Length: 206
Length: 206
Image (cartoon, rainbow over all chains, first blue to last red; front, side, top):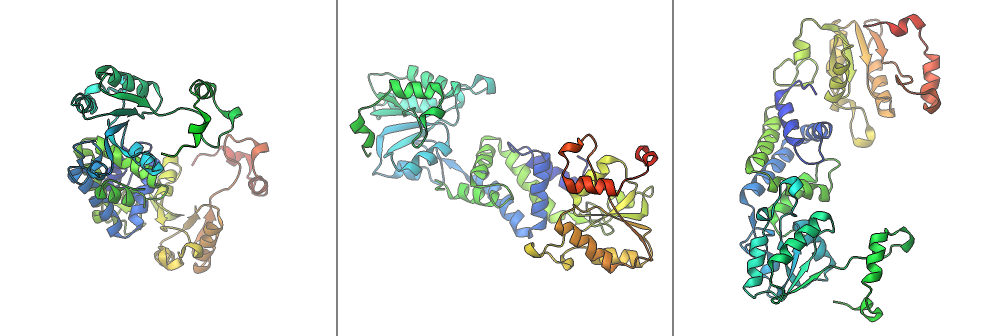
């Protein structure tokens, strides 16, 4: 695209580096900002800049946080011996929204993915293994997405951990609540039959 | 959504004010920035802020420009007596990409749209009318999108202008090049028959 202004071209270029935002969308967003009052753009620009400069990560679980300890880890009502291992902060938010989990989290910051150049050392696996070997953990719940990368990461962590020290579980896979069987894929349906549970447990509350 | 960090919540809120960007997308974009080196976020933030502070609009055609006159208006090879009236800078870019137009533009900055609270005084119509009554214009080409708002705007400008002073034209509507007739809508197909042109003109170059 040929812009009549270098300032515009630069803003569009920077914007289009964001994932899923192409040049056209970036131009649309930037032109929208130009039509809005100046304060809008300044507020956006300042919020992004402050976020990147001042953000901290919880020392315990590596979730983003404004304090050294995040609100979940700092909450004494949560069971710090049950750790749910997730990929990133969005998964924490998703699980928190269910109100079904009273333990704490461990945010890995990604999945092992050789294709994207992400190895175990890029994730917070070492600190998780340390927590377990310190004997501070009773149960580890794997809640990574069930892709090849997720399974690889689960397995890598599993191999690093002494199974005598901790109970390792993984979230249930099966037919989604409200879904019809005929539209479910075979792998999921197959698993949900193999991993059937006693009927009484199916209406158990946490 | 419940964020563990106020900085994060603020950045997501600002981001989600952009058109077509909801909270979830905003969160994805902001988390992406957090994974990138700090300079990326600072470059984006600075580019947006500079754009909004320093951008100027061409005095002649109201296109965005870093100079008082944009590159098109400043180009002496362009015919400044033929003015193509467009809605915004994206239309300028689209027409420039065709390399078929040697005149100049007039960017209205929008269309008359009472529903969105945009009246004639919010657009650069007055300066266009002035250019015409100064006798500096030979032809005015309406190139607004053919929606109700576009037609209203065309008609409003048409009423403001002395038809003796200037030739007023509008871009051709018809079946797109490469399209099959059977899939065209009736209005477009109907118009393309009513406004048929001599066959010899159809392979004329500009």
